[in-house]
Image (cartoon, rainbow, N blue to C red; front, side, top):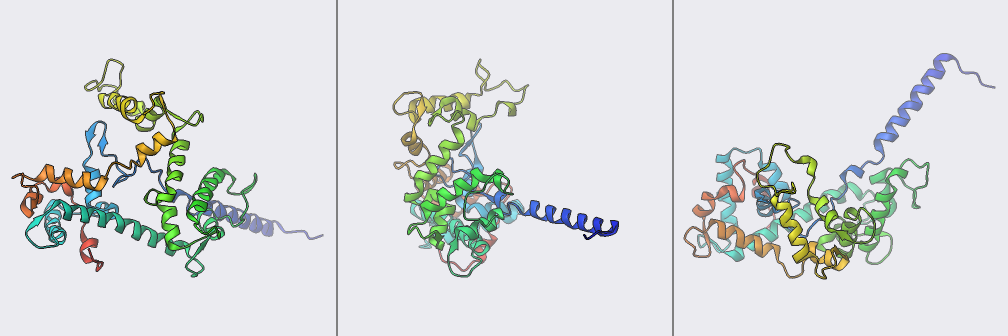
Length: 338
């Protein structure tokens, strides 16, 4: 029988604790970086309206792209305007001195696709550990959750508390895996990360939306569940009474209730089914790019000739980039073509 001295026992105990800390901190390694639920197929993670008011952050992200908008908050208004002027020259592809609606649409589409491409590339480098140009489900599990077993986690496993997230990821993975080989190519991985941009993935987006909002798990979204997803009464200022109905809700919330009843709930049964949820978050008859281009031109076109001069855009720079700037640096230094 081996008898350990007190010092050796303490060393073993310390080492054991260290292992526990390391494992606990590494599981899951990427779970906190999970995809946000797609609330609506749009040009930004931001809502186009915030508390009933137009949200300029949506316009900034639609015009700049997600990455540039975040970076540009570091610039002064003067530097922001200067860089905006250089971007305008890029948008004006025929160099006629005007930005047409078509040119603006082309630019918005470009920055949206650029974000998806760059985000996929960043994640691909992080996950493609085998350099085979494919990512296996096991490799994804190890990198994301620190769990390499291909089976479902069982009670007692270190990642058991993440089983719902793993099940959800697996379902999305299987839909993205077009040839069912349990591996994803870069294109399939892009569909996995951004399911709202792939037609065959959109039912997954609908299902995830339903699961997140349907708190009573009856398979539908009630008006109360719909409102609870966008409005937290506890965030309201107790002293703020302006803009509230007698019932206590802000007017914009009542407007959302009306929209639910008159627009979202097409069959009038007081709840949203999967088809109605799809029409809400991924409308087929609404072009977000065209709508945003029209909005930007309408809000900036002083002489109402249907196109924008450089000066008209600079005069309304807050609409495009905000008074706190937005870094076009990356867009200007990249050699990708627009």
